[in-house]
Length: 100
Image (tube, rainbow, N blue to C red; front, side, top):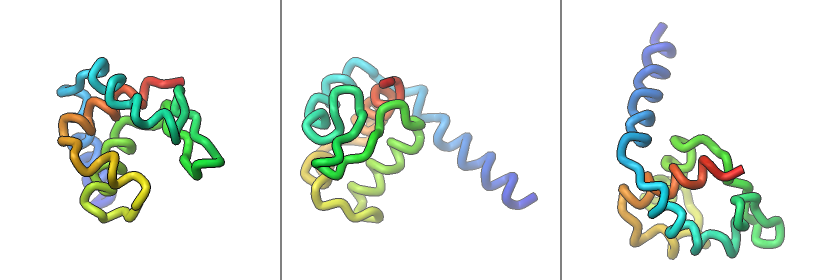
């Protein structure tokens, strides 16, 4: 039962991401990501960059937050995320999640 409530809390927290997004701004921000992640977020093995296109919005958002806070170490991504705001993360997440 405790796991159920934790799951509900987690989902409700991350579902709020969708309410404050600007997909057009996310598309603009994503242009810097194309070099490693590809135009459709398909990833590039040569860059050791994973596929992110179509990934869950909450997962992308959490990953970006964790990289910026250094809870998830990623020296390659840090220069790209260090100056982005929470709103930028939401916009990027919204855009990337819609890529096919």
